[in-house]
Every structure is written in structure tokens, then in C-alpha cells.
Image 1 (cartoon, rainbow, N blue to C red):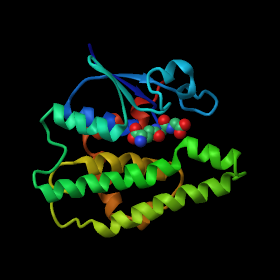
Image 2 (image 1 turned 135 degrees about the vertical axis):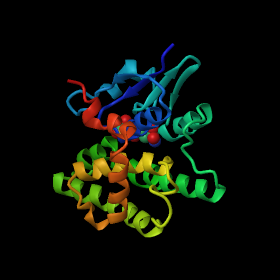
Image 3 (image 1 turned 90 degrees about the vertical axis):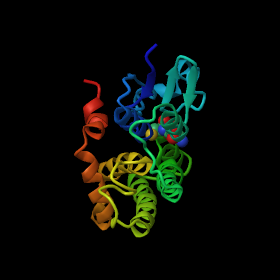
Amino acid sequence: MRMRLYDYWRSSAAYRLRIAFNLKQVDIDLEEVDLHPAVRAHLSEPYAGINPQRRVPALATETGLFNQSMAILEWIEETWADPPLLPRDPDMRLRSRAFAQTVACDIHPLNTPAVLGELRHRFGADQADLDAWYGHWICRGFGALETEISLSGGSFLFGDQPSFAEIALVPQMYNARRFKIDVSAFPKLVEIDAACQQLPAFRAAAPDAVRPS
Ligand SMILES: N[C@@H](CCC(=O)N[C@@H](CS)C(=O)NCC(=O)O)C(=O)O
């Protein structure tokens, strides 16, 4: 059975897994779950049977249904050895994971449609408030990452190959640009994003490359 990734073309959490599967050269099927506010397929009962958290991504394999992109990313790394998506050195592995978790735990969860919807409907936020909220969390997280990283090593953040860090960064950079955040304040992150965009695995995973017609 081919694995099926429950995906949404603009979901940055799903985008992480599209990149990882492409880097490992593992073919999967994508099943679109339309998160558009006019559709909200992720809130439907059939989808709740696939992911009770009513979020994408979810992954169907021969052995079960799984959710949480970072846990699935670890599983991908444990299941397919090549190319490694973490550096060999334990300290560098820790740094790559910490970078990725800054995105996945400290930036992204604050800016999901569910959170923005609560701000809008429960607390009366308007679009300007939401844009300010969105930008605040991206700039705070990216600001810290820009300060922490040093590009003195290889061509990517933690060596000569992209790792968990880039897999988390590139989708978040897409989101930042989508919401018109001025990313020029984060030149090292922009440089790494541009290096990733040269790689076919990243290009084929990009939202515009998988957008349903
Ligand atoms: N921690 C989860 C987050 C998943 C998540 O929040 N996905 C977003 C799309 S990027 C979603 O499905 N949001 C639905 C909503 O906010 O209602 C993961 O990494 O898989």
C-alpha cells in the first residue's frame, strides 16, 4: 500500500512532510483536505475519523493512521536512512531539532486558522489586528533564530545538507511572505531559504507545485 498524506497545499505543517518525503525519495499519495474558510473539510466528521485533532497533516500507512508533523518527521528519519535529515554530531542534531521546534512549537501554533478564528470571532479582532498578531510571532521567532545561527559552516544551517531546521524554516518563510512580513530583517534565514529553493525536493514540495488545479 502506498502511503497517503492528508495534505493541504498551503499547510506549512504538511509542507514539512512533503519536503522530507521528497528528500528521502519516497513516493506517497497526497489527499487534499481543503482548509479554505469556505470549505473547512478538516472540521468534517469523516476527517475527524482520520485525525481526531482535525488538523493536517495526517499520514496513513500500512500499519496505521498518524498525526503531528514533527513526530512523523522523526519517524521518516528513523525509517529511511538516506539522506540523513539530521547532522551526525549530537550537539548539531540538538541544534537542528531546537531550530525546528522554535518554528513548530513557538511560531506556527500561534498562527493557525483555528487561533486566528478565535481571535476574530471570540475577541473581535479585525484583519489589521490579525496581521499584527501574525507578524509579531513570526518576527519574534525569526529574530531569535537569526541571532542564534551562524553561517560559518557548510552550505546549510548545520552542515552541507538540509536538516530538520530547513524543513521547518522553508514553510514558515513561505507563510511569512504570504502574510507580507518584511523578511529582509532576517538575511541569514533568507539566504538559507534561497539555498533550499535550489533543490528539486524543496521545489516539488512548494505550495504552488502541489496546488490542486
Ligand atoms: N502540531 C501540528 C499542527 C498541525 C496544524 O495546526 N495544521 C494546521 C495547518 S498548517 C491546521 O490543520 N489547522 C487547522 C485549524 O487551524 O483549524 C503538526 O505539526 O502537525
